[in-house]
Picture (cartoon, rainbow, N blue to C red):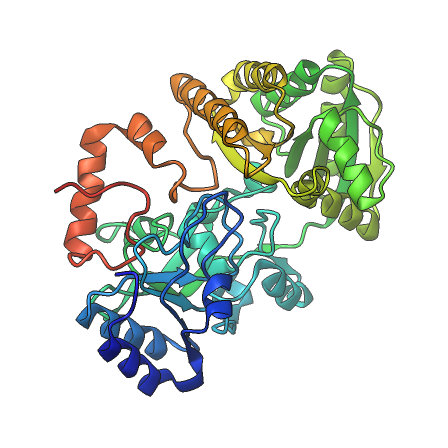
Length: 461
């Protein structure tokens, strides 16, 4: 359904008034993300401000068999929020209230439009923080939907590990709750983890209960540079295999450091670089840092450059998070085909270095960063969107990268999700039998196929 039926448009207009829009500017805003895909915008946009709003919108769309695509901050990179079958973009960004902070239990309950930066600003006065940091100031609902992770995942896990309970509006417009504030449960199917990572294809998340963590007593960040990319990666592998509880370890290749310097006006040494952060007591932070420095020296790494003051750390991580924008600005008019894979830590060097050799041989401009402490790294292939041959070369690089990762026991995506871009790769990774189980779940929960249709896998028949 590329256009709304007049009856549905009239019903949504009557229910939501000015919070229902068919204006082209609003529709186009909700019809694009950071991916390369060009898809017509949704037929309409509804701005929800409560769970009841979501229920009513979903019920009306279900009655007319119109697709519903949940929309948060719009920062996804694999085409998750594109209206490939038309329908209604359901914007939950105004559902941005922090509902309850249970500091004694280290939990918080939020609406889906709350962003990670908003949450951390709210809870830091209680000496707490939420560690999942995908870089973008994404909405927590979207982070649940894509099972996001980021720079702290090596120590604190992903959204899968930190979402305790959800409130979800089903495709029939009913409200269900999954999980509790207890830290564990053996009661029934784990529905929370079913919805975390479902990319809006099974329901709309309207409340989330998350784990919080005490702010570390001591935090220090360090930069270590290497002449060889292999030495940098081997340092990470040895650090993880020794069990050092490092909080963050990010890889940036020398070329990407240069792009970051030009964009962020920083003066980082242009070399292959590890950005690290250590959390704990002053003594444990010192011990961790000394251990990693010794490992780095074994692999020809330079002495650490320290960033201990909060403002220095913020500047350092802001530069890292701006790597995407730095890369895109380096080639005016380009678009980035962004991709990520994740492999077992023992195969990280093989996978990453072979992939670097391929992209260097291709002539396609790129950037490379990685949450390498958990075997996850990202390429952005910078292409002229009007050059079909460049796009095909970049997509071929992506296919080769993913095939390599899967062949090494890894996954087609460590944190981006599947969306549109990685549907074929999920089939390679999971196999037809597992996809049949996923299709059966989708059919059982969303028999009308109105929830973000056309994503993750293709329905049969």
